[in-house]
Length: 489
Ligand SMILES: Cc1cc2nc3c(=O)[nH]c(=O)nc-3n(C[C@H](O)[C@H](O)[C@H](O)COP(=O)(O)OP(=O)(O)OC[C@H]3O[C@@H](n4cnc5c(N)ncnc54)[C@H](O)[C@@H]3O)c2cc1C
Ligand SMILES: *[C@@H]1O[C@H](CO)[C@@H](O)[C@H](O)[C@H]1NC(C)=O
Ligand SMILES: *[C@@H]1O[C@H](CO)[C@@H](O)[C@H](O)[C@H]1NC(C)=O
Ligand SMILES: *[C@@H]1O[C@H](CO)[C@@H](O)[C@H](O)[C@H]1NC(C)=O
Ligand SMILES: *[C@@H]1O[C@H](CO)[C@@H](O)[C@H](O)[C@H]1NC(C)=O
Ligand SMILES: *[C@@H]1O[C@H](CO)[C@@H](O)[C@H](O)[C@H]1NC(C)=O
Ligand SMILES: *[C@@H]1O[C@H](CO)[C@@H](O)[C@H](O)[C@H]1NC(C)=O
Ligand SMILES: *[C@@H]1O[C@H](CO)[C@@H](O)[C@H](O)[C@H]1NC(C)=O
Ligand SMILES: *[C@@H]1O[C@H](CO)[C@@H](O)[C@H](O)[C@H]1NC(C)=O
Image 1 (cartoon, protein in one colour):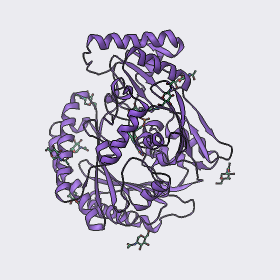
Image 2: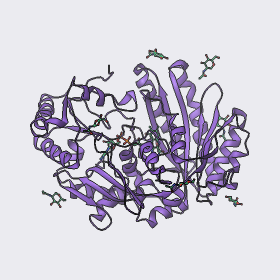
Image 3: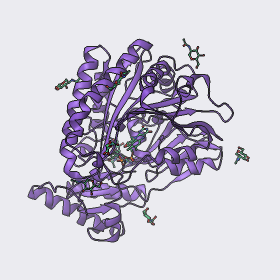
Image 4: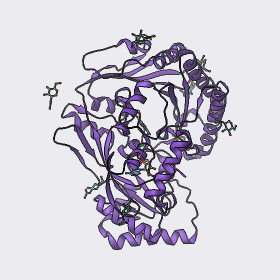
């Protein structure tokens, strides 16, 4: 069963799609799967959310980067449209899937291997972060990847990657020292700071605009256990909880920390914060006290391995739900500005919420959440020290990248939720803009399909990304034949 409204394709596109499948069938018969086959049935449903399910003409599941290169050349030759899916967690319809075209899946690119001195781990794009953490855990190591175990490796690393170690290492992508990439012309190249340095920079936030990544070589991080958990407080403490968020953001002086404070809407609003401290000996560190001093209705904080923690946070991920995530950012330089930014987002969002409840029954709402991710000077310095990325952060400011999350049951509500979040987001951003706290950065990993990403990186970085895309993909294969995802132009 799927719920896609099949978009009527032009005759030429239909012909090209089927010629893409036939061309793949001719050149790589054992890696292409027709509608109705068991592999098609499995892979076409192998997405996180219901929102992502569509009706591709066939599935291409390459066994190696060489096969992917050969298949890509065949698709380009036929001018056939395709989509690419890694972990399938970008919950935007059409970002990683396609009606009537070829769905390319990374399921069989399964490299997961430490190098000899264990300083680097090579990860294929089939993997989820839970795979990476359980593999590295055997060696008392981890990596700066996703905070929730089920999330996919490739999409996160190509978006930047907000991670628990950010104040020590920057974005997840900043810890990648080499990429294996299949270019539009079918070349398979190794991309690092010495070979193709411009492309190396562009891949750290530029998404799928330049090539298809078949291996990421990432730095490892020693880790036996961390002190971490989810600390949840009741409605009467919500104001104090938001103040704690501003207190933390105004003074991110302890690099071992990361927090994700969130409000969960319901009959009574809850404050729930993911707390992380990179230590296997220190509990309740000073820097997290603004949160841990608030009495909890439930708390899971304690010493655990990264693998255990990512499994715990992963329990919050509901499969086959309908979803929308929306991203936005406020900045500030002190407690008052940061609290004001948080407060405007909070108030605007909760003021708009009755309009949503009036249209979607409570029984069909799975979760409504608002969260904030603080990114300050240490994080941005760590990114820059590793060579930088296109995201365009300024060390002089503290960024609170917020996300609105709505998950529901029943595609009947898709349009209602979509227009509600769009209106609510504009209302929030107009209000933060008026207060002088708005920033145009929208984190790709949390963004909705109606949002733009690259203008928020700043005009100069955006233009550089456009030039790099043109240099490595002169015929714009990754924009025209692969329409899904966020495009630089
Ligand atoms: C529950 C949940 C928790 C999350 N937690 C975090 C978090 O802690 N930190 C964070 O930074 N983000 C987080 N995110 C956002 C996440 O980074 C993005 O959803 C990301 O796209 C997931 O990667 P994926 O491989 O699963 O994505 P997919 O949906 O498979 O792919 C995303 C995009 O990348 C393209 N793509 C995929 N693989 C490749 C490849 N190999 N080469 C080129 N292009 C490719 C796809 O075509 C698509 O456009 C979370 C998302 C969810 C739903
Ligand atoms: C390819 O991936 C699928 C899905 O994970 C798996 O069932 C299958 O065994 C893999 N095939 C090969 C040849 O690795
Ligand atoms: C990992 O750390 C534990 C202690 O927490 C130790 O007992 C074990 O030997 C270590 N394993 C490796 C592979 O270093
Ligand atoms: C709120 O309370 C009402 C009445 O008790 C109940 O029907 C509804 O399901 C609750 N909603 C949520 C989101 O808990
Ligand atoms: C900043 O936080 C640290 C704890 O991480 C604390 O010791 C220090 O007093 C705080 N500084 C200010 C100015 O609040
Ligand atoms: C957050 O919003 C709620 C609901 O509008 C409001 O009661 C609360 O005072 C707000 N808190 C802050 C700090 O903005
Ligand atoms: C609302 O959710 C219920 C399950 O909670 C589901 O059975 C029903 O189909 C949903 N309503 C619509 C209109 O999709
Ligand atoms: C302000 O709101 C309008 C529509 O109401 C919208 O077009 C505009 O993009 C909003 N501004 C921001 C910064 O989101
Ligand atoms: C493919 O493109 C790359 C980068 O532009 C170039 O170096 C390489 O020579 C091209 N390969 C072929 C076979 O044209």
